[in-house]
Image 1 (tube, rainbow, N blue to C red):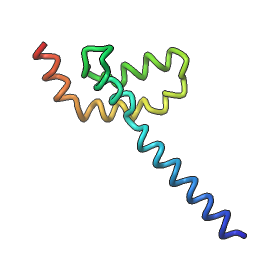
Image 2 (image 1 turned 90 degrees about the horizontal axis):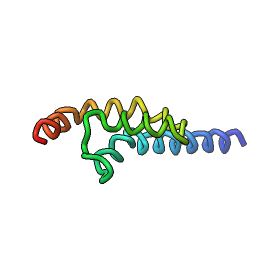
Image 3 (image 1 turned 30 degrees about the horizontal axis):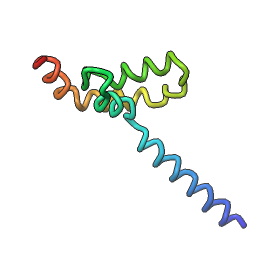
Length: 85
């Protein structure tokens, strides 16, 4: 019986980690491919998360650090985009 509980806990942990990985930087991806903004914006994922957090989805704060990291990675692209406007 202990083996089943341990296996179930491992499966739940793997699923949770995969969901977190898939959702990581979600604000950045939404902002980058959004038609509502002049995308991509500098730190657009962080901006998007801030807008959503202040609204009706406060749990999006979990995505905030991941969007910050991904926004930093794509910062050269967004800066070039901003300069070329």
